[in-house]
Image 1 (cartoon, helix red, strand yellow):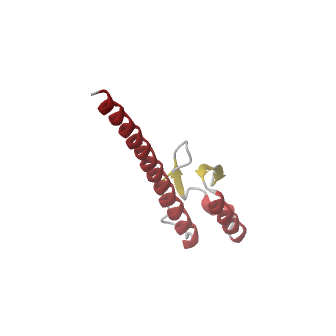
Image 2 (cartoon, helix red, strand yellow):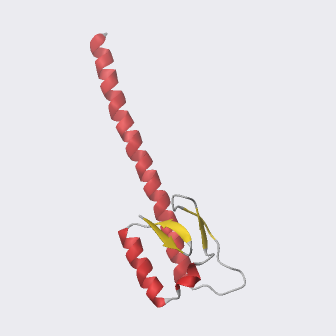
Image 3 (cartoon, one colour):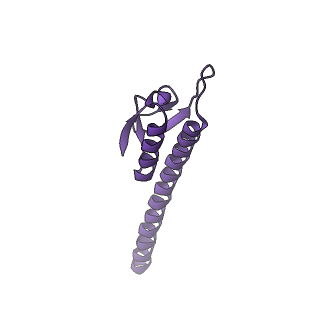
Length: 100
C-alpha cells in the first residue's frame, strides 16, 4: 500500500509499515526527509543519506531492506506471469497437436 514517508510516496506491505511506525516512534519522522528517492509507484530508486548530517543506521537498513523486498516482489510477480504463460502455451500446443 502506498504511504507518505519522508514527503515521498513509498509502497510498504503491512509488516514493513508496522516496523516503520516503530521506527517513527523512536526517531523523529524528519530523519526520513531526503533519505531516499522513489518513483510514482512508491518504489525506492535510491537510498541517499546526507554526507553532512548523521543518519541512524536503522533507517538506512530499513530503507535498503524495503528496496530489496520491493525488487523481490517484482521478480516474483514476473515469475508468476511467466508460469501462467507457460501453462497457456502448453494448452495451445496440446490443441495444435490434436488438430494435426
